[in-house]
Length: 203
Image (cartoon, rainbow, N blue to C red; front, side, top):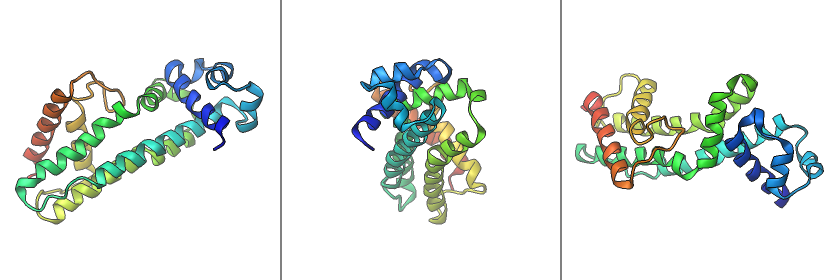
């Protein structure tokens, strides 16, 4: 991306996250980016096309970082190491809402204004971000099951259970909104979520 286009994308992410799609204006985004509206329209034909691009680009960035953290988590070779592997994966999930605040502010607006967006746009966002992260979690759970360290009769359900149990307390209003726990409190919440998950899935 060019420097001006990159500035526009960053500004749009902040404005859409702060004001929502319906209230955000092209003028406000241009001012925030330090570009003219004419320059903005050279890159994006409409507010909808700008939003779609920003959403997909931002979701891809978040997923890239989160998937890398998930895949680099230590691999458990014995039952005693399973909790450590799962806690590392869970921390990667929790950190999304902390490390990418502008993105998840925008996602919260999507949840509040979902009727404004074409279904195709929402599917593209899901494929670019959330589904990639869920797939990475599922791969790790499947690996643990293949090594005989947990029992997973339904991988999709196990993934949902893991994500919910390990993020709900740390991000009390959902994965897409950062909570107000300290680092130590987050550690406790994640560990508790992992223990609960293992209660249902340990060998």
